[in-house]
Image (cartoon, rainbow, N blue to C red):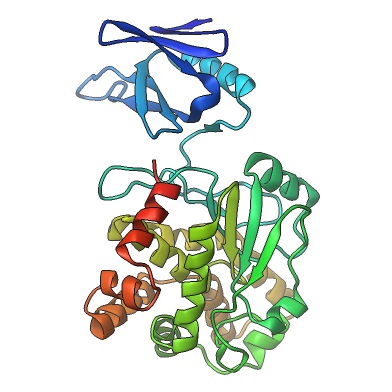
Length: 350
């Protein structure tokens, strides 16, 4: 089959490069996606051009211009010849699941040096309590999920245990101990918002500060990094309760280690507000049916479902105050030596 200037025959992607014919085995292709350059219409009247981008297991990247239909048909055939090929450009976006509103694939986020995180390897999420069978199939069959890291306390886990998915290995790494689990969601939601004390910004800033200052929490994040360093095949997913605070900071630290720009890290952190908006509105309506309409209670609901950029700033400010730089924190606190960071990058970047 011919697509633009390439063709696929006998299980190979065939193309001319430097006056020579190249035969790339489809089984050696790791990731394919469509890239579009230019803008259709508008004042500039630029011409939009589509490309098929192919990334190999040796981390080589090829770009072939073709029509949108050719890209679609070519990707479909490549996927048929090699079912393990990763398709698409998620750019850290949400995985659309029935029962998990805040599950994301960090794939395609770009690093400072121009590389991308390989899609379908690094997933962040909320808890997997009562995950639907359809969602389990998506995670195991499409994302090849093999490991789950649970950041919640033992009490939270007992109250809302993760659904056990066959073939997946589970790790319990509570980021905070039971006595200081201030923003964990142990206990019923009604108890949490009607009986617990206030959750002012000062409290939350202190909680975020403790993530990178408290000895226990820092050691737990170091364990998290160690699992990622030793992870081999398939996707690894980490989560807390809602997937925004403990999972959010764990994700931010990982992205720092991979060399993702601070601006991109902040954008990923803030996506929680978009993905949990519907859940928050559902909870507000539920409370209204219980005639709970107190403004202070509603403020707590918003705090429990949202994040602020200032919380992430507090984390980085604390790290820089205590360690001088994020790089020094990664090395001294999380034991990520230059060699370990290079291993992480080679494992998850292309």
